Image (cartoon, rainbow, N blue to C red; front, side, top):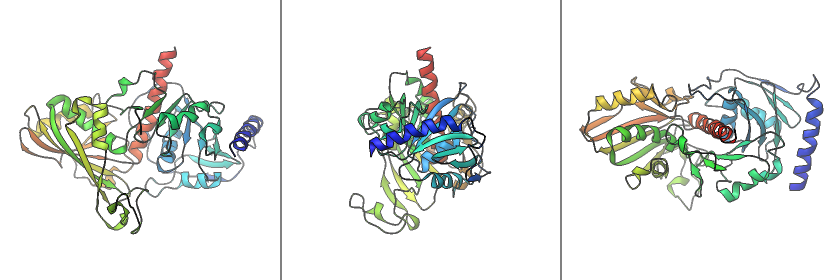
Length: 387
């Protein structure tokens, strides 16, 4: 099976070279769409377009592809999609219940997915090595299957010609974890495998960094009120590992564990042993919110905290940390590319050193934007290292 997949990839490359000179190369089924919100989050990363690949075409893989397609700094050259046929990939890419119809034009040409005229080789290889990432020009690969989350398991992607692998999930080993806007300067080009952490870690860490840098968090508890995800059951099902997790996501508020808060200490080591958290899964389909209750080492006022976060959101943390003083609700943040949007109207303070802070995050689209930003950042640093 692996050999045949490899042979098919080689044949497709040869056919692609021929079709590239033909005006009839893009004449197959057409999926024209419009209406996707702007993919720009205001973060400037000037570089030539980098060849990207996607391993896994689920919720995050598709949204990462959407964002890359609208980004002049990226060129998607390969997508390994499991078992999905190209026409089904086009359908999944174009239509999204939450994020609307894709803005780009969507066409198919045999095993190529054509987005805004860019021909992307698709494959259905179980062994990601057989995709031939390097030959397809996919130097930086987003691993979004949720399977290849250790250096050992992701090595086949490198063996297939990719330069670096970025996990769109927490690593299951000691692979480096980078949260954009928090510790991106720690990436120096020496790591081949980098994790973007989780959506909740990205939703929490920028706010935590801002507060900790200014007011010295002594200890804190986080609760994320998290939208449903595909790992949950639509109706009551079975889960021997997590009995409550097996109940209907669409009809319950479900307490759950999460490692997202502890994972923040990977990117802010001074908080190790001082921060942990839990989750409530709720019956909404996108956008989540973190509630951070913290004891501060430096006394302050709630107004001073708000002013500080607003300043950072408009300054050095712009694009990652956001600020809102309007009476908004979860759907108002759908499609928001910022990692963590502080809600000034929702927080409360008990005394000058004890405070509850609230931040929203689009756990799908906002997180996918961070994955793309991390891939571009890794490519930019690598280019400087090799220059």
